[in-house]
Image 1 (cartoon, rainbow, N blue to C red):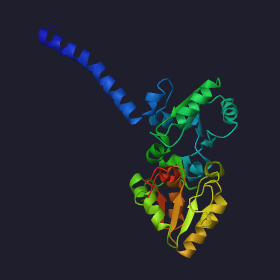
Image 2 (cartoon, rainbow, N blue to C red; image 1 turned 60 degrees about the horizontal axis):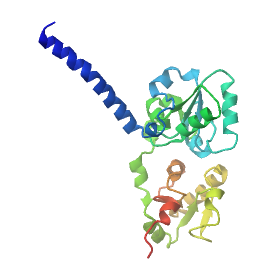
Image 3 (cartoon, rainbow, N blue to C red; image 1 turned 30 degrees about the vertical axis):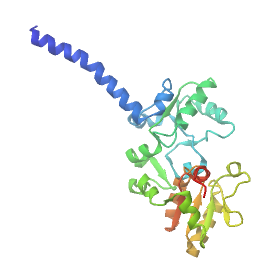
Amino acid sequence: MTSRSALGALALVLLFPLLALTQVQAQTDDFPGRKIYPSLPVIETAELAQDFDRYNIVDVRSNYEYDTLHIDGAVNIPLNKPGFVKRVRKLLEDGKPVVFYCNGHTCYKSYKATRKAIDAGLQRVRAYDAGVFDWARAHPDRAVLLGQKPVDPQRLIGKEQLKQHLLTPEEFAQRAQSNVAILDVRDAAQRGLIELFPFRQTNIALDDKDRLDRYLKKIRESGKTLLVYDAAGKQVRWLQYRLEQAGIKDYWFMKGGMKAWFKRPKA
């Protein structure tokens, strides 16, 4: 081997580990939860699609999120509901491994579900941390949006479309002084005894689908502006699908929800 060839071979030997390290770094930057849960087994979109029928797929989000958008055939077992481990253990009895998923790259529920299952002594469980949005875009034929499939990727609401309907707590409070409808979508546990607009607001948890649908119908018929707030500004993104479906256009969400309300500068 010539000295030039030897140097070239050495350069490749040194380059491969560097490329591998760069790839791992890019993955952890794109999936910050992998830094927090480095030992948990994960599955990528391509592998899940290839062996789709070999897994029990579990959506660990709320019932409302699941009803809005989910992977076709997935079972909804909310992470925070009693009996979570018991239901997962029952699924594993058919011999198929379990894959947990949630919203995506910055949602940690899929990791927490995997950790919880492993800590309970369950094996053959993995996290699909790319989440439901990545899946719906890559495999719209195997996703369900508002009860319909295949999913039209154009109907998936992005961050920019959400931003167009956000108000700061100060702007929200100013709008609330006029003749508008105000909706608090926190559940009873989140709400407690605190209401921002007592005697003016309507309280309907997102999981109370029938009552919520009746309320939205009344809002559409009345033509009123609708102001909505939640606990931390994360639940309203799912309500936006229902509002668009119901034909309501004049609606606004409080950015950051109740959490941001109490952090705002006091007059």
